[in-house]
Image 1: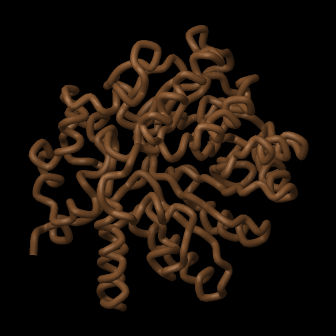
Image 2: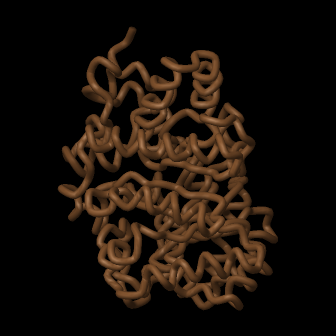
Image 3: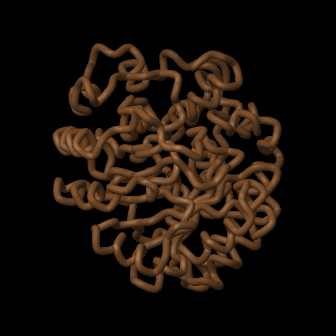
Length: 382
């Protein structure tokens, strides 16, 4: 995640301790796709969620042993995802258990199931943050999510969280089908008093692979980033204290640094220090993922490379296994990167960007990330 608002304003934000401390983290943030079941049919779902529960999903007992392994690996945050994680009957029990083991529990949800009562129960279980997806305004969102009424239900879920004091934010995956709604989403964030909004670049995995031709081209990506920057600057200027982030494309880091270096070199130098500490893409380093069957991956999008299974070994053993060739390579990836990524001058703040997108495009895990929209001149070593 890349905090646009922090780079522009310098404000203290909730993720600073994880993103900007520098050095190797004690353990990775882990995304757990706790169930494959979902009540929506999103066109861009990276997990290819289904209406029904997968028969091989971890039981409550297995999930608790998995969480014990996360504690042993000093994992700071467990992000419950899906499918729709709130469809797991034991979700609140497991979130509370994670908290009891010293792990911060956060949730990525479509928000349509969050009533006022369930929002209160999320808060009581110790969930520290709820990220609710809205991929456009009413018509666009419902078309992308495959269910009429999804927008209204998700917005009500956001309102219910805010009403009980449960920290909540909005998530938006950018495609050619919805980027024209970004202005309206910023207006919604201000109007509803939503404290945080994350804009996700599309990753071509799961059902998202079918939307490859609906990803933005480089010129469109630059215009969208300019738009996000302008609206964030306006929020900061008016002291609204909103957190605005982009996710899954570290070309954004270099792009914003280059813009700042032209207008405020002193601020640009400070931002570059933060970006170097963050280290760019950290799949297999500071983020990992586990699916509903217990398979471990370098991140939630890299589903073609299983590192192990938590039914056979605890997470700490799998994650610290120096013999696994992919983990070893990801943690020393510069010698493996090819093409534009290998020659790029921004490796300190990008780290080769998203390998899953490169593999989806070229069938080569180490090929250049096609999501990079920087020009050859902008990446050429000075």
